[in-house]
Amino acid sequence: MIPARFAHAIFGLIMSGLMSCIVTGIATVKAVGFHPETLGDWMASWAFCWPIAFTVILVLGPSVKRMVEGWVRPQS
Image (cartoon, rainbow, N blue to C red; front, side, top):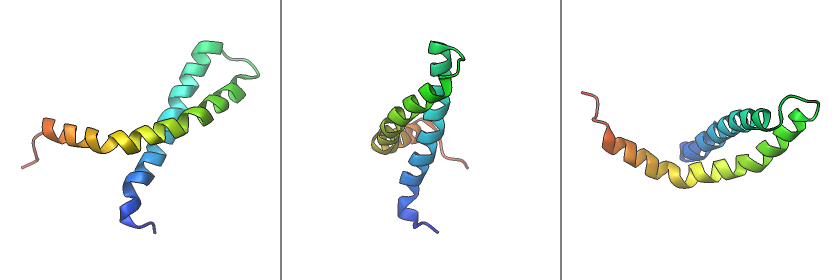
């Protein structure tokens, strides 16, 4: 098992990977259409974007969490 102190980083890694994969896939198909090179273009775009998305989640995630906690009321 992974220690709990790494939970935010693991969450960020998985979430940024999934979201950047989906978004770059949609953007790639929209920009270039379907052709034999589409998968390669998509993977190149994803490889470029994933580290950026991961960094953004790690840096901004705690602030966004606090902001959301200010907008919602606790469950009773």
